[in-house]
Length: 257
Image (cartoon, rainbow, N blue to C red):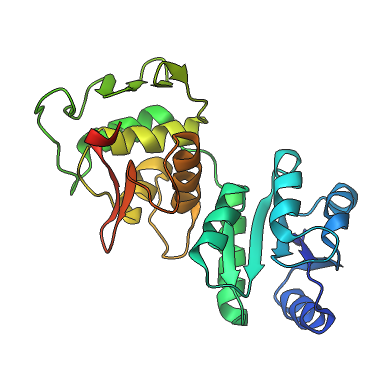
């Protein structure tokens, strides 16, 4: 059965070009031109992948993404003509799995679509295996205990200021309040917090959380980092709890809690 893509784009010429290109490459394509019809079209056609333009009549792409994300188990890609990082962060926080900037390069778009659909078919990683791998992963340096604001790798509980993590109960507390994290979010956060002050690359994080090699375009980690920052009251514009270390990856900052 051909994978089904729902494309919501108000530029009719671009819609026709993309539809023909994707159909030639083995996809069934359903199109819409108004963000307000996204929910109805998902219900009617049950696509594997939803592609939303950022600027749509009726309902913009971010709002449409936020509306359908709780109801849609497939992947969501946002198309944007904006190079503003905040638009991209907002897309991830609304539940998008990936974003592609215009002008579109068809082969790049096709590669990103295939990547998202591969992820849709992959089984979730076993959390126990993830944590075992984290404990023995090459290239990840363990940090020795160095006071109240740091914790060594390998513990079942971690404490940093007002933050408490319990790996056994899979619970996160911040300032005494429970922070609701999905299993995947908790696993990623634990890996970072268990190595405070040590940048972990996308290669390492993808390998440890999903058991596969990073393909260079997968945005799963970035998506989860954006969600973690929002849930943990870390300003996405100027994060100081989970920071990006240019050229190295993401790092948990132990003294910011």
